[in-house]
Amino acid sequence: MTLTEEARSKVGAGGRVVIPAEYRRALGLRIGDPVILRLEHGQLRILTQTEAVRRAQEIVRRYVAPERSLADELLVERHQAAERE
Image (tube, rainbow, N blue to C red):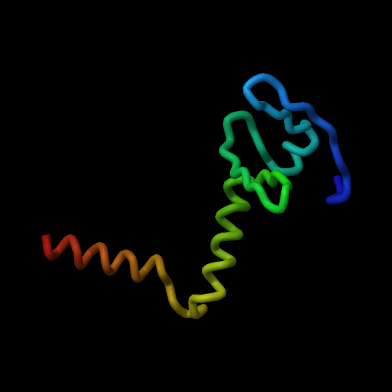
């Protein structure tokens, strides 16, 4: 599947929209998987949770030096907070 392909679907009962099987396969989606819906410039975008996390990490990387680990800093802060309790 290329990025230029389109598929048609209809809005069903309860606002449900069926994502065609080939699209689900291309995204690695299975029944029950969480997705993120975004409304951007009049378009509805559906992102897998993995893709949404990847994009968020990409944004954060712009503001954090490569040698800095926010996860390590958080762990240190949590350990210090636990010691104070």
